[in-house]
Length: 251
Image (cartoon, rainbow, N blue to C red; front, side, top):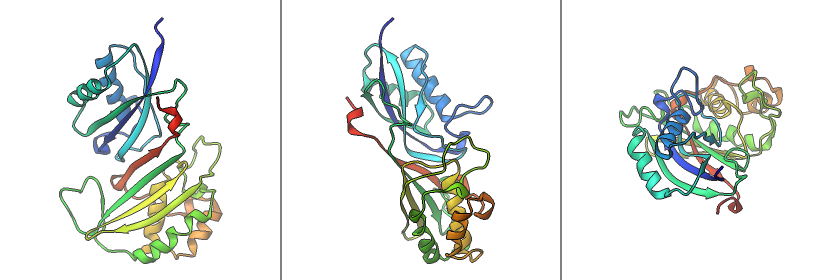
């Protein structure tokens, strides 16, 4: 049997039409489209392992996945052929050889997300941002966001009934960027829990609209109770934007 080589594939996608990243039995997913494309091009069974799972409707400006394939492949030509075949709401940017044990999920040591708000309707961005028809107090939201890196246990922002072993995350960045008609929330950590970013954004919006106070953020996190946090913000505003790996994984 021919020995297989491992590759990291870098891609981006508009998640509007997909039921998340992970393959689903009765709904189309990004993983399914990518695997089908790779199998068609490489003519062998391909399984891709993503760096994480994005929920239905969530986007990725940068998703990394790994796959194994036997034999030599022309990487630039494969990228070209994939982009000609897959739907236009998915784009493959690069495919790189990595060490045989490199893992897209377990070797990622830092991930970044953005949540995009529009302060006025925009037909060209409506699928990639949450339109706020009433402006919240972003100064209060900024103050509340600054509290997040003071904590490690974020069970209060996790989807309930998950199979994770720990709710500990090393969160290093949480701040807002202000543009003319757009606001972007940036958040970075070594890992994220299911639904964590959307729950944080929903809680920040509650604070911005006066439903909760900045000081309530301490109480919510310390409660470890999802019911104390705000409702999840809509999926369309969320983007996975960066994933970091040790350099020694790449050949």
